[in-house]
Length: 53
Image 1 (cartoon, rainbow, N blue to C red):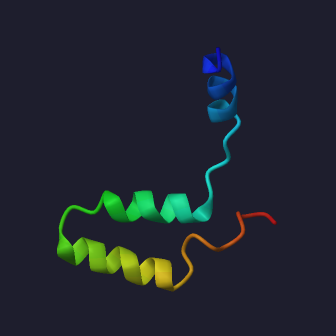
Image 2 (cartoon, rainbow, N blue to C red):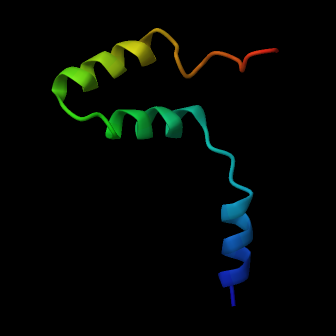
């Protein structure tokens, strides 16, 4: 009954910066890359407005 509603809600979901950061960290291959990515996030890599704004 709620299956179609769930599909619509999932299709309209906007990815938050926190979700993007978590996905970026989870795809790190090793500890060194993870630490590098954490430093990028700390510098605000995912918090910047898109280009052109």
